[in-house]
Amino acid sequence: MSQVRIQEAASWRLDEIYRHTRERWGEPQAERYITGLFEAFDRIESRGVASRPVPAECGVQGFFFRYERHFVYWRRLPDGDIGIVTILHERMHQIERLRNDFFGELLPDKGSEQA
Image (cartoon, rainbow, N blue to C red; front, side, top):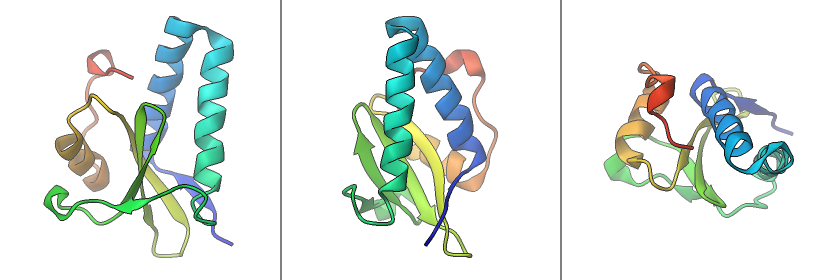
């Protein structure tokens, strides 16, 4: 069975989502939201989440699914594991951020994100 591996950009975004949610709605809600995301990651292999291919115009190969207000982008890694590439809020400019996170370009300043 494949393992889920959180890649650098996704790890950074998970931290941002947690902090934003905790500040706005409190720690219990932040814990529930992050736990729900990880439960969704674990359902990728069994097709327990409805993943779709990333559109060709994005210029990357991978898949995505929606979790509440976020889109989770993932890809199959060379060893067969699942790599969570990034997690973007529905209001973020998806194509530009997706390319940056897939290709490992510099992450934006922490103060410029919305979770």
